[in-house]
Amino acid sequence: MDLSSPAVVNRIRDRYDLKPSKSLGQNFITDGNIVSKIVDGAGITEEDLVIEIGPGIGVLTSVLAERAAFVAAVELDKRLIPVLEETLMEYSNVRVINADILKTDLHRLVRTCREEGLFTGKVRVIGNLPYYITTPIIMKLLEEQVPADSITVMMQKEVADRIRSAPGSRTYGAISVAVQYYCRVEKVTDVPKEAFIPRPKVASTVLNLEPLEEKIEVADEKMFLRCVKAGFAQRRKTLLNSLSAGGGMDKDRVRKILEAAGIDPGRRAETLTVEEFGRIANGISNEQD
View 1 (cartoon, rainbow, N blue to C red):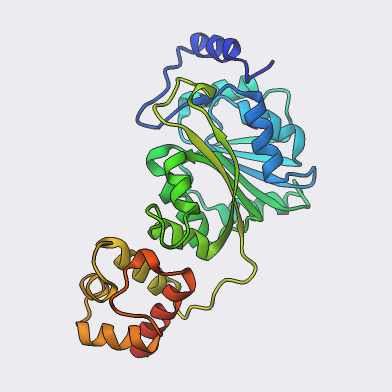
View 2 (cartoon, helix red, strand yellow):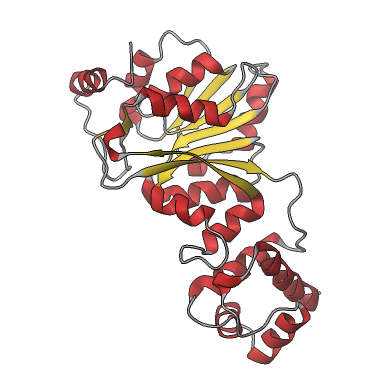
């Protein structure tokens, strides 16, 4: 069964009276070339565990099962469970988990799969992320330090562009700094609207996030992320104003911290590198000790 065929996808939808949920951001991919690019971009081997976020009707899952040692597919929509039981019935190395990825203990999932001897290689997280919760999912994976060797995810192109942005660009923001603090970011491929059923209103992009072996040194990661969020909360304001407003500190204190970090208080957040945000966060942490 060629699950990437639009005709097959439509037959499955008709058989199960399956109407994609707008509230869950469901769009089923129907382009085999894009699926191959995603799998290749993730660098999967036959020893690896793949955690797939949102398998849908199993289009990507079936290809992952042919490439990986084991696939744990986490699907929120219970209507899709019987569909996946049919479309993936020939694969003995797939486990479908009806759960919310945001509430799933991925550390435990990885540990259980390893203890059961289901894989001996690396851990790869792959998914076509619902547009409305792309950022929460990515930040869960990064902040919880899920033991993944790579995270390959499809998302709205606009969000992908923000994540990849460099300091000084119009799209550079809090998500850019946060993701680049944790990962090396690489673009895998763009995905046109025509590659889905139903067709979304926007184009998509697949990114590969590879966790850095050595991140910049920060005394307190939560403080670092708070500084980033505060800095961009009012991005047209200077750092002096945005950090004092968002961090609840008086301006004299903020000025001293910025100057000690070698940063002009008159600069704006969009001009700062990840390393500079780290120096600011460390300055605040040191003062609080």
